[in-house]
Image: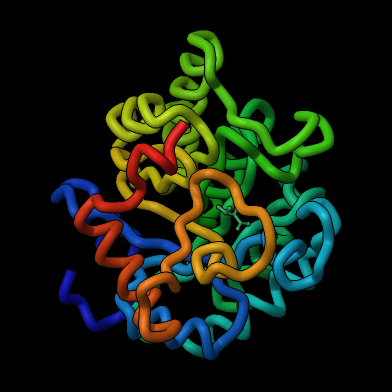
Length: 265
Ligand code: KIV
């Protein structure tokens, strides 16, 4: 997309309708944000993955609203074109009024949409937020904030009942007003099914090439850190530098050369 102003949710929805794949990465500071913006990344997520890749924790559970607020403000300063999504951390959105208060903090920091994990009672929370002017991205499949309940970082919705539930949750989230959806660690066939079931853009991470877009954690795709999940590709390999790696990622997503079967479940 040749847009040089700030992308909006309408632009991202139009990309889905036109079959143009959306490239999203996580980011936590202004310098990387500008580099991603100049590389054609469409959406930046200030993810609670910062708990692991920035703060060195073993999960995202300990991340606070203050952390996301701070990093969202840093990233917002670096952007001209890229859409900015801010993650709501564990414990910050489970009651509608708390969710509203915390979402407002992240929007004031520069986020253009907030993301929250889970379905069930979260559908009501999404309805509460969206009917009060807060743009929301839902997050289904593997929801890392529930890692201790799930018993580890595992592929989700492998059986028919799980797949049917996930599609129905996606539709319910859209009906509640969600305008974007992240699906994590699910079979590739289900990623495609979800993308077809809703009008909003569906961004996959470990969810197959037929989602409307892809997201990776920046540190993982730059080859930093130790053991990474199957769905990660190191884009530094064969690149001349970091901007080159971001550009290679955007191109691979656009041309549906990433993910390939080796990255799928
Ligand atoms: O926090 C994060 O980085 C995320 C992505 C893995 C989607 O939620």
